[in-house]
Length: 120
Image (cartoon, rainbow, N blue to C red; front, top):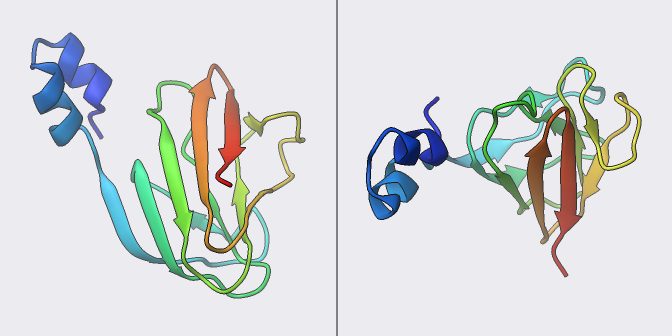
């Protein structure tokens, strides 16, 4: 997946890079109840419509990834896991960051760490 940053660095205009480098994923359904069987995310802008109790999603590897936003339009909190040994904020590599229903989680990669924030 080509990111907007990669397109911009390759010479595309910033406006064009922002449009072409965005990979929206809409209508997502959370799966699994652990990091091992949660839904693997591939888009930069993810919109969940169904989130059953204790289900989740896994971010891509932090290194080299673009910023990822996740909207939880489901009825339950969404468990968001990091990829492999990456971490989210100060959580362990196996712990989940919770994106409450009706909220947006913003995940910014920095090395092997995802810096996460939850909307108000």
